Image (cartoon, rainbow over all chains, first blue to last red; front, side, top):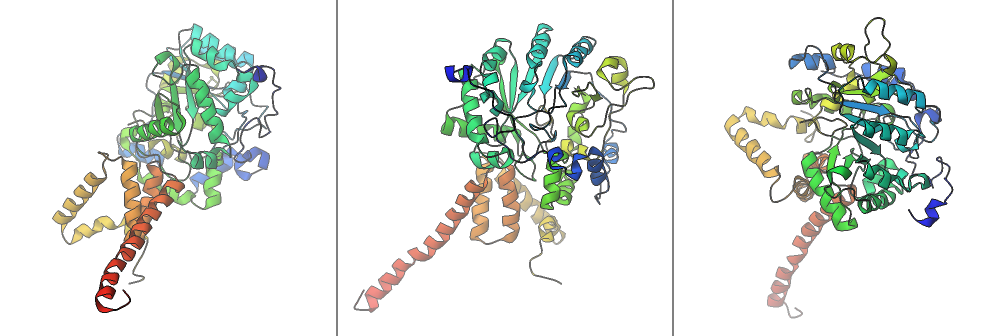
Length: 370
Length: 112
């Protein structure tokens, strides 16, 4: 933290000072696909040979998609963000001020966490650091002996309010999982907004200075790469070598590991595909590259995804489509009612977007699944 | 029969096995082995392929290796440089033959 930052005023999140803006949220644009029902309808009515996800699962021996033991509590603390990336599946942005988890719901999450054997608390958003209760959630989770992940957009770390955050997170052994689509400027700025790359490199320098990204398991720095376009990610191991060499050589920064994620055909990426006229081609590619070996490791099987209002979902993508978990009669799909017994017995809800997680090497919040 | 070049032929490449499955199997096995990560990375091999695709002016290869380059982690700047390398070699290959021209001119003419 520099003295200037310590006393610096917080910029308006909607300003370019606060973060790059690749686009505006679908909500702010009043776009038809701001409606989750419209997204699901568009996907479901697309002519797509072989496009029945449950049939594809059935053909490889998965008559029903059921959970494995619960390992990860993924808590989406809100949709507020200092950025508006073009592919965002959350439709996050500075305008999403209403949808943020309050303290009461965070306490409900912690109480529910205590009823399960999950070992990891994965905190996401939006930019989760912008939630006023973020540090409380981290502290409480760490105190319970959980591995805690902060899913970070990098640029938020340059805001004055985050000036002491890296030291604070590092002292608690929090893993930081950061979005960086490419190790060079062009594709990074194309996806996330002009200026993202330079700010991300500055944030990575600060992470390195705080001890992150240098092999210390208590200060693990993971990068996440989504393709900057309508194509699938390459081999995670191969890209990790390229990213490490490229960032070290040109910018002198290091990190521990790279996750590759496929772009999910929902929300803003869906809107982009429609705008480019490539939705059909992209969906056909996802279907054509369906890989049965990815199914066992799908994140919906070992994760429960909790929304800002406490609603339970099978994954963050289902959350963004308003597909709540299938709760038994008399129970609401809400963290207040979370019970490991019925959670383990539930059937996971699927739709065509699920082909995004089963294509190629597979895709999850933990990277490739094969 | 329609046009000589049709984009759907790219996806039908495997049907070349119809006339000789053994040779096709050998070709595709060798082809896949060539592009596996080795002393060169998959990304580097895809960039070479993209350059060669332009040198041999194969629209199928340009289609395939543009996508492969993106998937393997190259960006447009890197891919454009690869195409310039291929173009420079093509241009240079023509121009360097000018030295033959010079020798012939020296032999036959008074001005060389």
